[in-house]
Amino acid sequence: MPYIAPESRKLLDVHINQLAQAIVDQAGKDQADPSYAGLLNYACTRLALKVIQLKFDRLRYWIIATTVGVFKNIADEFYRRVGVPYEDLQIQKNGDVDLYLEVASQNREREALLSKWVADLHLSIRSLKCMRRLGIDTLGDLVQRTADDLLESKNFGPTCLREVETKLAQFGLKLRGE
Image (tube, rainbow, N blue to C red; front, side, top):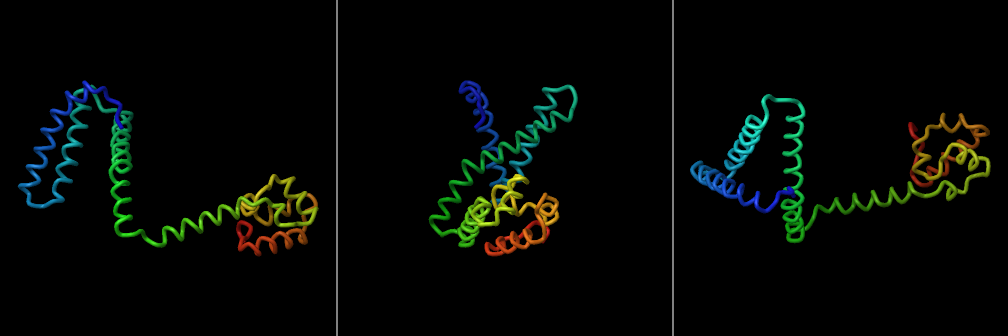
């Protein structure tokens, strides 16, 4: 929400309401509901350009970046405050895409799995010490490593590698690059 003082809003609202009515009137002449989008786009673009023209002596990159940021914030805020509640009502009315719940559940399960402690794998003492030495605490840390990363650790050889790969496979996981 823009943080504009109420007295400033009143001054601007008069002009905004007139412009909005002009857009609605023109869109009505076009006989096509979507035509308001082009008119709204034109009005917002021309307004931004006119403000820049009147406020600044020349165009600079920071002005462009700031203006683009304003439009991005408008889009985000509009969607958050208008689009999301509308979509939530439509989901309540018509139901959701069933795969959203399934995907969300799978993601939660994977995150829970990756947050498990490496100690939960019940590895040999040698393998666990190597994990500690490498700063590997969770399965998520472990699956970010390659076999070569592990083999470079002191006392971590092919036997330890096979043990780790076997334990990861039991959870449907692999080392990176495998």
